[in-house]
Length: 122
Image 1 (tube, rainbow, N blue to C red):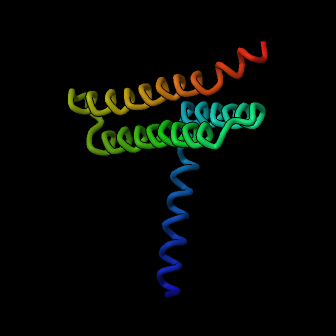
Image 2 (image 1 turned 90 degrees about the vertical axis):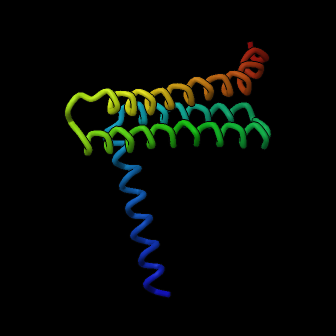
């Protein structure tokens, strides 16, 4: 039992290290974290509903996970080859596009949730 707890502790430490790596090395990840803070503050300010919170949490999660997956894919491609190869370029471009699509869709979700609230204030 104690060995299992130690193994879980080590797993969490590795996961935390991966998160910190993204924060330290990925400017876009930091941008998305700042955007997340802004969304949370706006949600608190506008007292959004439980359903709106759920949608926003899911959406934010999607963007942050896409950023981390993009970093992992780029690192793996660089590990495999540093030479310019078409398949490596495609892998990196597609993983980058994944982040772009998720961020674009998150913006749409944010507009759907917050635009009516912002307009009612004006």
